[in-house]
Length: 282
Image (cartoon, rainbow, N blue to C red; front, side, top):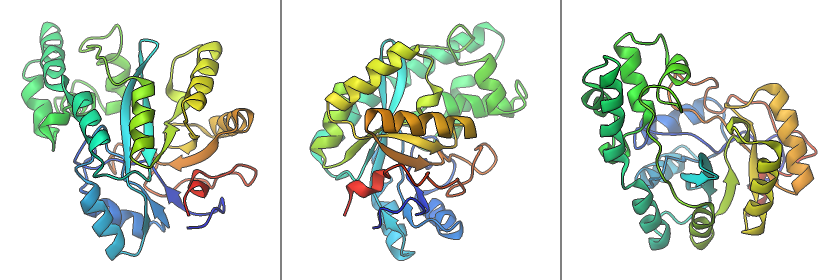
């Protein structure tokens, strides 16, 4: 693997094993078609698609890093930490993720009850229909059901009007701690990256605390170029990476051909002055 910033690396995407709509094999084919040189499948709190992704990438001669996106509760809000280059068979991270997944089913039932109160029936069963892995039923699966029912025109509209704080269908959940998530990733031989930092609703002081604590416990990178960031945010988080000494990551956060803002591998290159996260791997 090369550390040059022009490498077409896509190190954040999701398959049907979590809340994506394509199989690991179909994602590998899409990555190959779009010229991806280095790929990582990073399903939410789940490593069940890794072996399939490794095999598919190998068959297509794409360099591959095993990955995961861990749900974390930090200062009362949910953030996501991507682990790259992990040993997907490491018992510590497998057990940690299992504990993190617990409670999703109960949360989903409570979300459906909230939606029932505003006249939307059958949401649990409807969301379950979209969940390839029933243990990982999520807000995205509910969002697809609400679009199917004509409640909203697309999932973006769903997340403005439903399933978020102070809106119908929102149910908070206590995820993993930041310290635990980073520890699991490091124990499994991987590197930890803050996913799409531009999405979080923290003050500048809280973000500063997040960056400093993340670095103190061994976090190495932040996503700079991602489907969740605007071009202006590419510049903002490029500066943040330099300021705090983070490696810079790049990933589409691709879920579905119709839903996702950016296709797998179709992203601007990292700026030359940033050190890519893949430089941490040989």
